[in-house]
Image (tube, rainbow, N blue to C red; front, side, top):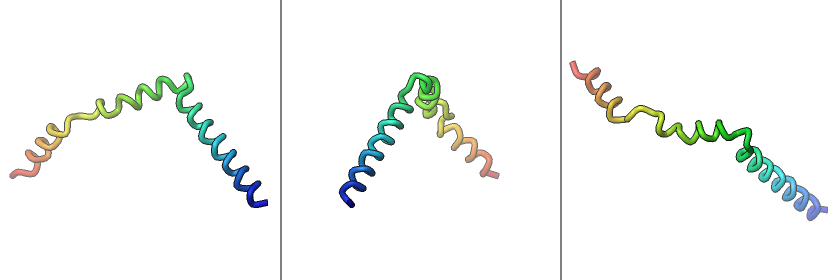
Length: 59
């Protein structure tokens, strides 16, 4: 009986995994994936922020 439970849970996990993969790469998510891919480049440079903070701290 335990073998059937293990087999069922494995199949269920595989179906869930492939469902998430299908959802993530579906054509409806194309725009969201493009936006997420550009997030690291949309942030301001760290050097500018650090220099602004340094100016604010000095008297």
